Length: 451
Image 1: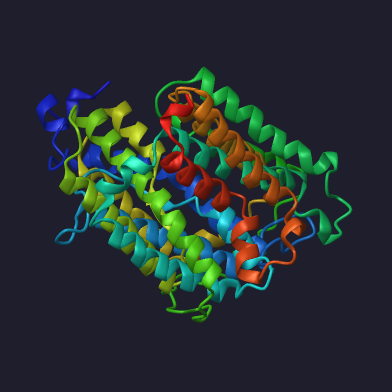
Image 2: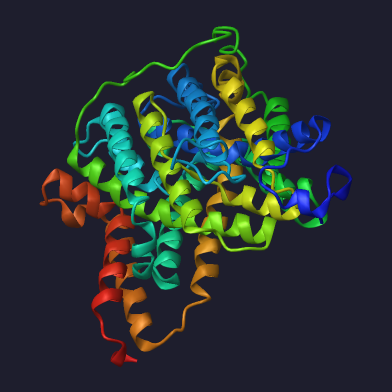
């Protein structure tokens, strides 16, 4: 329910209204807290996959490259959010849309940096940069491609994103990656803090209301962190070595073109753009009781792409709108874009202070694992929820069955395509890309008469 003490109902529905600063600042920080864990987690996962994580025997995250990537996640989430809230010409919806690092790209980014003949972080960041440009161009015609992505297709894509990530959650909760030769992997000492995160998250989510419920994963991770500290699994040694201030470095990981990564980034940009269209509509419906305009949808897509492209230059990951913050706008009833701008400024300040990234870097991998088990499971559940809108005719069941079977099967058994060229193998064994491509193509070509 909206808090009328900070403005009239008409003012609260106005994106251009600025509440009194004494209330606007806490509301802005609340937006940051709601998205904070989800924003930095993709950087931690990708950095770990690239081999720059897991720096201590207890499973604490690596240093200093992981700290840098966490720093860039905060900085460019803030910058991309400013693109949305303040805008520049056609760029930005000028709505209270919070941007953050996208989970959707993670299943494509992990194989991009974990071997298979890829160009590593240099190739990934080049792909993020070029994919962001492609994403920006989608803004010119995003409305005309929505017909090709009905709930059958989008629900399957979201489900596949979650399925591609659940293994990572279990590995992290058990102590890292099993092939790193750690005897503690899978031990009770590793699982205990992770399970505390899961239990506390569930308790907070279902037995509290308001912002506490929205921030359940963050509170769960804090509880797991305390338990891990008591068990001697937290190492603060790297905080003192982190700089107090540091600027981002352009092309820190080099510039290296890799066709598979670029294709993957461009394909996922389409998925991310459609997600942003949905979030933009959710913001206007939940906060102002109206549909999003074509200008707002296009502006949001432009901001997505521009934010992603600039992030790639400095070692950041792809950005997208954050759905949890859409729900927060509906919960508070405050539609002010200036409130979100305050939150964006806070993120940018954090992004220039490596010590904040170093503090996050002390979170043991098993504690993070408990959080991502919940988050990745929710991604799967979101996909299933989207699929509930599908009319399950024979035609749609065939499309879903073939797309899921081939995509998930190739992900589980990548050696089935060992004779393909490296680029094709990376794209096909991601699981997500072949599944999504099959669903889109079959939905467009199979006749409705099959029903």
